[in-house]
Length: 173
Ligand SMILES: [Zn+2]
Image (cartoon, rainbow, N blue to C red; front, side, top):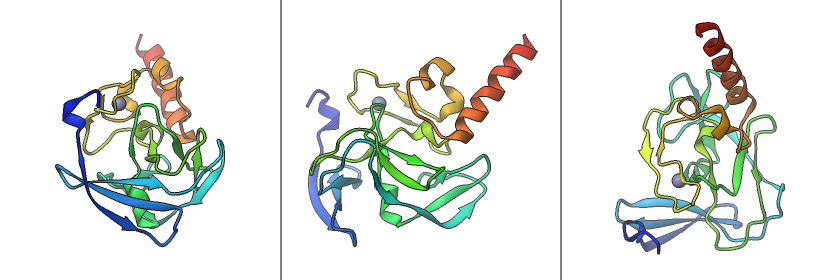
């Protein structure tokens, strides 16, 4: 482990209805994360997702699927796909599928780049993902430069908001 603060102890594995995934629960903090139990190819649509509820405001477990909609995920266990600055999946809001960004092997944690869906997060946090590309404090795409966001695949509503921000900056200038 590069960072001693990242040292976590696995205390429990929770099975989910789809046997290709499992939830691992670690201490400290009862941190939960979703892991693959199967191989997925790069670019593979690994599972569809839907909304069990649509909200107008985000919380720590919702995913933003357009400018004004923050959904509670169905299946719910997809909420345990945590953030990483070098992620291996994305929530594709055009197809409503979780898609692999590269090949995933059994035992890999599934992670996505929160700012690829989230414009301004309800609960910003300090990322300790360990990636050389780690962005540190994660607050949503609104707080990242266009240059940083260009390194990632983001959803249409994020791309649109970034374009609007750039136009407003030009006008203000
Ligand atoms: Zn990070």
